[in-house]
Image 1 (cartoon, helix red, strand yellow):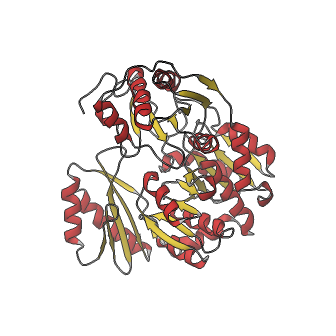
Image 2 (cartoon, helix red, strand yellow):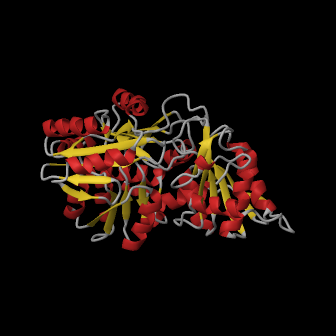
Image 3 (cartoon, one colour):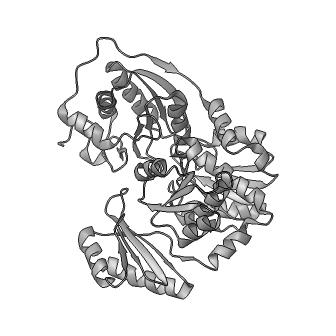
Length: 447
């Protein structure tokens, strides 16, 4: 696809549309995306929302213009979190478009698209519609109506995790100057918790920490605050609110692998014997704890475009990714930061001991490297070298290159965002072996 006015081909990512504004994506380009969505999906009516990014209002306006010129009616749900947008699509049974760039820096923006949750509209469909050419304006333009679905969203979340399952615990909540703060302000009045808000002010400059909440520097203010407040748990959300990670009462970040296992255990209480889908990077603790809880573990590819349909295929009660995306059957099989946060409060409430007690137990059995990123020019050559060096291990190429030995295992895969990245996750039976093998594999990647 040649560059079109306001649209650079690089914005069409693996899962959504995303680029730097206005270099890669501008208002004219966003209008074209709206028209292309209308052509590809053929909706009569859609929901449209946006996150708190500074370029959001103008881009959303242009997106709506493109949709209405194509004859599509629009329900504008305002400034919302991505999981609230998913709720709107499911609640209204309508296709939708969310103007967001997830955890990217402030200069980025883009679009997430669904037919009706959880069915994702891939960026390749929009790209194809643009390449084929867009039709003229509809004879009758679509209408625009504003609607606030906040109360309905909160009600739905509390149906999934009822308030009575949560005890009077102290929680620090960091919403990364994004979209989730307003929902937690409402929830705090409905739950028996003492909530300490952090970075609740919606600010598209994102002044307080990195937007990518899996990065240790982004988590540091939360870790410090949990210690200072002597809180039972800390929760952190990325700016668009679809991801959630946690800090235990020691001020230690809980790896996404452990969270997947704990949440799976929680969800299986309500649906014993159900499948749990989790990504290939995750620690063996997920497989082990799911089996112990009477569930059926299903390992799968990374990314919402893969996890959601796999959950439907398996009729899974829950799905988890190491990155902090957690998916719930009762929430249309999509990821929700808000449901995740409440489920973690339920888990802590049911534990009868500090959260750190359980995390220390996992730390003593499963030694994790965390995800380590490397800039690599030639991905294919590096992955080939890895397969050759570790050819005596058990190979799995479900997503990237996964190698397993009796006492250690690792996954190396390319990153969809940002480009040019190779991501390593490694696990071993003890700390020394983990560190040794981590350094060994990294040396090969970075040679």
